[in-house]
Length: 476
Image 1 (tube, rainbow, N blue to C red):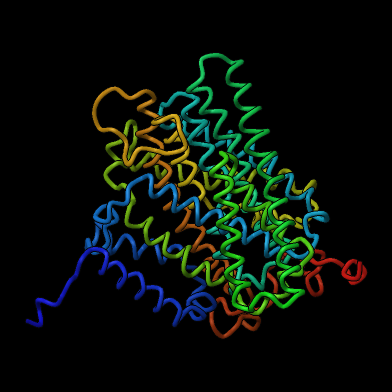
Image 2: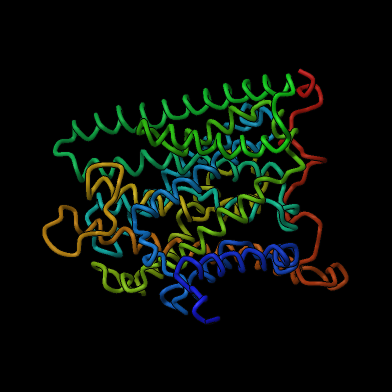
C-alpha cells in the first residue's frame, strides 16, 4: 500500500531536482561565488545536462509537452525581465553622462561583430550569405542574463570599476533589442523578392516601429509607472511587499505590450526600466531587498537548467554541413574576433575605458546566451510560419522553404551558447586565480583568488566614481 502512494511523474521529479539544485546553491552561494568564483549559469547548465535526456533522463521537457514555441516564450520573459532589471539598477541619470560609451558598443562594435560572425559562418559552413547574416545576428548581442550573473553580487565584481560594470550591464540590456535590425536585414533578404521590398520592410518595420517606437513606448511606460507609484506611495496606499510585486509585474507588462503590438520586446523592457528608475527614487526605496539577486537565482538559473536539458546533441553532427570540429572552430574564432579587436581599436573613443587592460576585459566579456536562443527562435518563426510563432519543431519531411537556414540555426546557436556559458562563466575564476599567481609571493592572499584590491591595470575611482552623479547633481 505504501509503494502505491509513490507518484514519480516527470513533473514531480522536475520540481524535486530543480528545487534541490537551487536550495544547495543558495546554501553555499557565497562560497561558490566568492571562493570558487563560479556563477549560476554554467552550474545550472551542467545540472540540466546531467539529469536531462542525455544523462539520467530524470528531466525531459519534451515529456511535459514543452517544445520550441515554449522555449521562445520562456526566453522572451527571462531576457525581458533582465533587460528591465538592467534599467532599474543603473545609477540615477547615468545614461545622460555615459551615452557616448554605450553608443560605441551598440554601433561599431556590434556591427563589426555581426560582420565577423557572418563571414566566419559563411566560410566554415558553406552557407548562403543571407543565412550567415541571420545566424551571425543571433550571436552578435551580449547576453544580459549571463552578464548579470557575473557582474553583480560577487567578490570578483568588487574588483572591477563601477563604470565598467555599468557600461557592460547597460550594453547587455540594450543590444538584444538593437540586434533586431541585424537579424531582420538577413531575414528580409531571404524572404522578400526585391531590394526595394527589403529596404522598405527593414526601415519601416524594424527601425521605426520595432526599435524607435519600442524604446519610446518603453520610456513612456516607465515614466508613467514611476508617477503612479509615487502617487500611491505619497498617500500611504501601497504596502512594502507590493514594491517587489510592482517591479516584476511592470517588467512583464512591458514585455506583454511589446509582444502584442509586434515591437522590440527588449528595447521596450529596457526603456521601461530606465524610465521607471531614472531619478533613483525606486532604487533607493528597494536597495535592501536585493531583488535582482532573487531573479538571478530563480528565473535565470531555472532557465539554464532547462537549456541544459534541451541541447540538441545529435543535431551537432546531423545538421546540414555541421560537425563538432567546425562548431568548435567557430566558437574559438568568435570568442577571439567577434568583439575583442573592435573594442581594442576603438578604446580611445570610448570614454569609460581608461586603459588597454580595461579594453581587453570589456572586449572579452561579451557572453552569448539566452538572448541568442530567443533570436534564433524569432528567426525560425519568420522562416517557418511568417508570424511571430515558430512551429513546435522543424518539419522533418516535405518541402520547406529556407530549410537549410531553419535546420542549421538552432543547433549552431545552442553549441555557441553552451561554449560561451562555460567560457565566460569560468572566466572570473581564471582571471582571479591568474591574478593571484601573477603577484609576488608576499603580495598574495592566503587563498588563491581571495585578493580584494582592484584588478591589475584597472583604474578605480573613489566611491562610485563617475558612475554616480555628483553631490550637486543629487540636489537638483
